Amino acid sequence: MKIETIAVHAGRNIDPSTGAVTPPIHLTTTFEREANGEYPKGFNYSRSNNPNRESLEKCLTELEGGNEAAAFSSGSAATMSVLQSLSPGDHVLACDDIYHGTRRLIKLFEEWEIKSSFVDLTKIKNLKSEIKKETKLVWIETPSNPLLKIIDLKKVSDIAHHAGAIVVCDNTWATPVLQSPFKFGVDLIMHATTKYIGGHSDILGGAVISKSDNKFFQKIRVIQKSGGAVPSPFECWLTLRGVQTLPLRVRAQSESAMQIAEFLNSHPKITKVHYPGLAKHPEHPLASVQMKLYGGMISFEVKGGKDDAMRVASKVKLFIRATSLGGPESLIEHRASVEGPETKTPQSLLRLSIGLEHPDDLIEDLEQALTK
Ligand SMILES: *Cc1c(COP(=O)(O)O)cnc(C)c1O
Image (cartoon, rainbow, N blue to C red; front, side, top):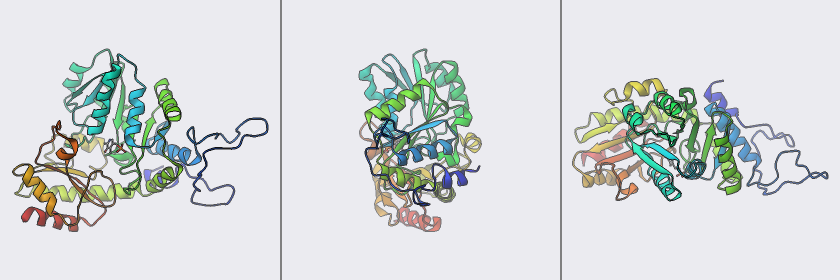
């Protein structure tokens, strides 16, 4: 079935007790045992599992074409579960342009003797030279944050597997609508469902989806159930509701982003536009093969420096100055200030999350902000 159909139906059932088409929210922490002590319906306590979480996990599994999913209370909690499944002595190789919170979490594990390196994985020779026998995990984010680099999932997976490493792809920015990492050999997919999957800037959530049943994923499952960084039934319900419109939203946001990137690309006050849909983007040919469309995120650099970028951000009227992405409302952000003093992000860079407004209105807003 096509993704639009999966998004509407996956993980949902007509409620057997009432016939409700929209699933009920199971706000219970505990479930009754049968007289013989068993739990024939499969639920016993909501930290371990809950019907709403099970529905969401089934849906995410189908969207990515995987075997199983574990839902978490945030994208970062999902990332944490992957890192906690490693052992002292393991090495993590990650792309250099990566969500800054993921970098911080990976570095946190140095105290548990898990070493890490961050390299530009758009160049496969860097992977070949940095991967070693201790490398247990290769962490990819594509398109990357905030420079929208595109990493070759197939080539990286082949080399990593040859070296005995597991490949994880943070698929938050592309979403399953635009990119199917399992088809290129990736082993685990991580999502911040906070972003496009939830889609309405009203829930925090995360997930890890596994391509196959294996020991590493079972460890993630134990961490989920025992550690308890799980989403509430209501958050699972809202996320599942968001999924129904995911393909339509992401397609509209990508189409608008393409028009806006072209506008920015021809503007005299802009020195650089980072958008994989532009023919001049260095990995445009790869993005065209690996992705269906180029997504709703754009970064651009304003002529001058930080003050000039900040001035543009201060003048917008329709874009909202806020962090995060993937919601219906368009956002603008000076990324370096969010990432803190250690950031390598250019000070002249602004990041846009394109929402569901009409692209003409968004272009008009950027035009006036750049003119003044
Ligand atoms: C937001 C984000 C995360 C972290 O998710 P939270 O829900 O904020 O913890 C991880 N990766 C990417 C690419 C993100 O955009």
